[in-house]
Length: 505
Ligand code: FDA
Image 1 (cartoon, rainbow, N blue to C red):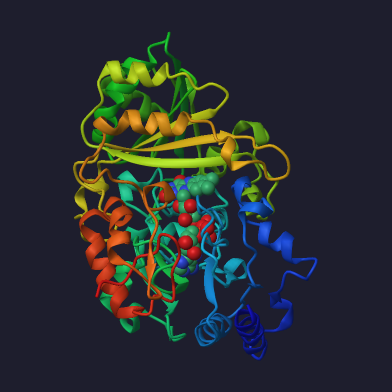
Image 2: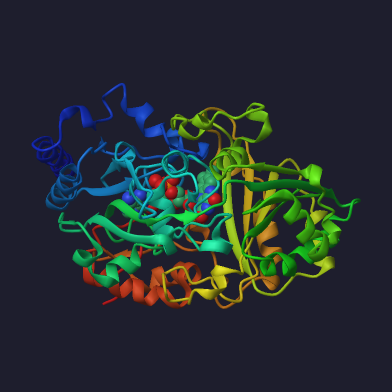
């Protein structure tokens, strides 16, 4: 309509008084589409039919650019989607399902990492990828590391705001548990340069309460954690015939109770279980420990590889296939995407071990053409010692492990067809209901899944009742506090998406 067109051009006009034109791209520019697609990780959101183009993409290099985006946006009725690494499972950092006028604030240029080896801390720009972070730490401070996720292209902006699970979490907790301070632009466009300036509530909310709800975090101060000179990786495959069902059944109670220095995760795919480790120590020790605690796994010295923690972060993702000796610079790979398959994810938390029969059923599930897998990550250790309310991430003591369900498929044509999604993931998820957490059936906010609920907007504001449907599942007893904080810091619900925390009035 006319008013949308004029508010859009007023917004761009307003921005251009502060932001240099080369940092502001509109759909008419030949660079617009490549930039929009640059960090999209899920091919199903590349298709024109499923994405409403943003009014513009802003790539700020300074806090003042982000402040201008918020101030101009509020004044002219244009909303913002903030993008760090672009890995949101539902693409909410660059697309809107509602017919809203919005701009993308892409933080990729705010990717500076400053490491202080003596204090064992670092300041990390919100547009930094995990690979960039790991590389910077490993080079500046061998002997230190940081607990975060597995994929090096994930952005810290989304990962930290949603929690941040990874293979160091049994020893050191989530990424969010190791954040000491932050800077943020709030819903009025103010730059709050410390946790003191933002207050305890807001600082609590941004460490696990989900991205896109409370403001635009510009940088994070993180606590770096000690890692030994060598860590140990092993990978052991077991087919059903080789005892995969019994091994996973036993793993459920063994893995969460192992020493904190040892994490063994499992990928279950096509009748096979792959057990992968991160051990903060050497091979002979881990082989000895597992011979005693988990002999069924049959880990041998030859299954192990010792390497630095930094090498490990590259090895785990790129594997042997990348090259015999992986250059660590693979961690800095630019974000340019080759359009891969379509992806759908779901998640669960498990508190009571599944029976051998249930696992048999899972392993022999007919998957048809779909390529689906389950990733099981053990909790216990430090995770069980942090109280449910210390951060918004409530899945703490009592959780044995989390499950991520992942389904890949190829759509047809450019970007493909979402409706061709095979039904493996929904069938498997329904089947699992009796065996996982109930009332609510919990889910991990960073494995975003719009099937579990989306907000309703009434009178310009997302309703608490609609948010509670999905919010209780991600945040359990912490959702209400998040909604009260939202009411305090953004009562007009300016920062919103289909699953943002609504204000509780
Ligand atoms: P993206 O930029 O899409 O942002 C995600 C959400 O956060 C959006 O709502 C966005 O608006 C908001 N946001 C981003 N930056 C913000 C900022 N600075 N301030 C406020 N809001 C901001 N998770 C995990 O815990 N451990 C893991 O090992 C992995 N591994 C993994 C691998 C792959 C291939 C994918 C696709 C995903 C994962 N994840 C994961 C899930 C991941 O944590 C989740 O998708 C994060 O939201 C991704 O963060 P990005 O910054 O990349 O996403």
